Image (tube, rainbow over all chains, first blue to last red; front, side, top):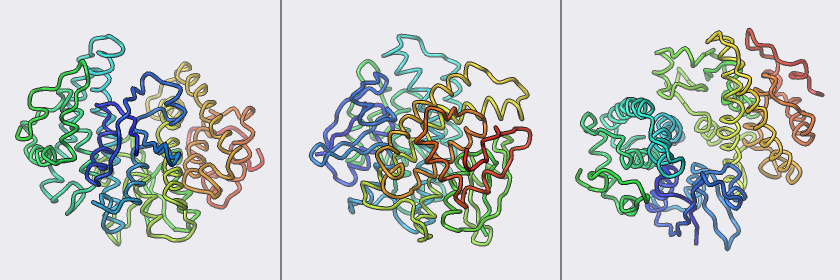
Length: 223
Length: 223
């Protein structure tokens, strides 16, 4: 069986878990805190990042969340998530990258640093200026998602795709860390509520990062 | 014809140009300085980054260098660069991401900031501490490439792939900015010399970023 190296608030591992859930691929979780820089983990992945997907029987190790998603897309037919014409697939990959790189860099990474790593590892207080900047930038990103949802059934087009999974994964981590004010983003809120009720999402919402408590609405499907 | 929005030292545009050169796809260059944040450019790409590949006749805009490479790989058969088994393709994509994200973040991005953006845009002196850190980190990355080349014909396996193009693109920018001490990296140096002599690479080596001069060895094929 696949072993998935991850920690509960890793947005890239969440994206992969959503994909594996939708494709009905079973796996067991292996807890990995990449900030501990374990030698054995760096030997598996020279990038030192989660997720890593490892099959001990086949002696196969896959790294980089997008490379892993492409691999699963190529090898498991069920629930295709990078689908359609070449231009449609490019749009799915563009939005996935926008979430993985821009949204992550502007919003998820600073929130993870200030509200998770400083509390659990560095034993420091969060920097309110950094938090304020991230929570200002999240609005621009959610405005863009609102606009996409106004114009399309799903983020990248007529069907659910990896772009939706990538966005839901980032948003779920930021929502856990109290970084989203939903009031001005009704379209994204409705889209996200649909996601929260999917069987692939339920296990994520039930999981906690010890020492960090999500806001009350976080795991509620109708909130 | 394709229009490629880029600036001469953008490593992601270089990767794409190498791929288009290998595949013999023609394009015209459109100069774009993403740090100027032109509204028209942000309208093309909400991520605000180069490269963007635009076909005015088909009204098709492609963003994100990896998404564009996948699109060209799917639509142009010649010189496949994401080839082989699913596991082999995952290895190509893993190494491409390692260069695009880790090498870029550790080495190329700080060098571009200190030696290009500070000179041309911010009119500041480079921070020698940041430069020293980047030039220390580059050795670890080149050690890993040395090791790959000791064990494989090309970075990701028996044939040239997108991983080689991604690595050559990052290295060429860092080499232009004087950031590579080649003495301890003979394997990567030999591999890179082969690359420099390829027809796809010659146009890049001949191009200059006005106001920034590369070291003498930069464009020499045998140095």
